[in-house]
Length: 118
Image (cartoon, rainbow, N blue to C red; front, side):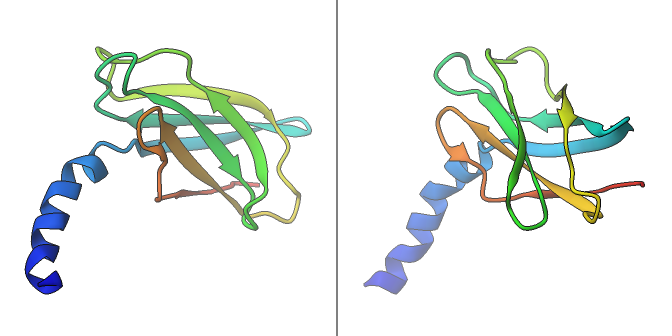
């Protein structure tokens, strides 16, 4: 019974999975003792009930280094890019991880690795 229902469960779960925000571009630039990180997100924002509402920068070990809150939907602006400055990245890190979130689905399961040019 479970094996027969699994395809149906996956079929109905697919739209929810497809609506999570995706990072389609990211770059980091050094600014003295900190970094500025620009992230481009693609998400099918529908309005105030479902929109990409933030992203975080994580060290390779998962420590949060910064968070960029997005305060409104971007229904007519897809994909869109927003920046976060003042991110202090440990000197021994050769990359950071970027993880987006949305109001309906929460944190995305996927992270984007961003290599740092030192």
